[in-house]
Image 1 (spheres, rainbow, N blue to C red):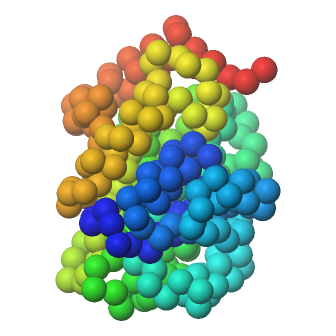
Image 2: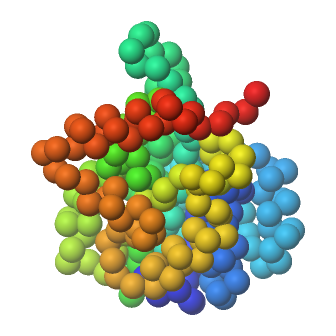
Length: 254
């Protein structure tokens, strides 16, 4: 995608990767509108970035999405980039009973949210000379974390959806790109300074550089070997990956 001159709407733009990319794109001269559920956080981020706008949104609610889409088109008619970034990542143990409420919330937020948000704005995007739909998935879409089983499944499903949508939009002016982060040291899990996690500034810098091209997937160099997983032998890779986590647990908040 082009990196300047856009009007960009970003879900989940008040913290972590969403805020980092929102601020980086804002500095490049784009008009950026962030969203989130908490008004105080939206106000804090926009105050720190003069010229940035915000809109309240509960990405798990179809009604909220439809309201936000109408407001966006009315107030920001030049909107040409929809960046689906909002999500959350709880730990779970699917060797036993699953918390149905958490599972449904994950699916509504991480999978249906981006699908609904894009659907609400896709016809508007088609009216623009150049438009982009962005999805934040995860390296866990390709190699799941057993301790975040449902989260990993939602990201794998979103990756699959992006592949299909990209094909179906092939003859339009709308480009579909997917950002698949590695473990980045943010509050998505627990910001701990763990050396296995990529620093947020390094991730933002590398991702912005790669976004400037037309690659369908934005993959930082550190996770290319995992992205290129060994096909039919992926079971061994997934087992080894998760065994390494069992032996060296990811820190969680107390």
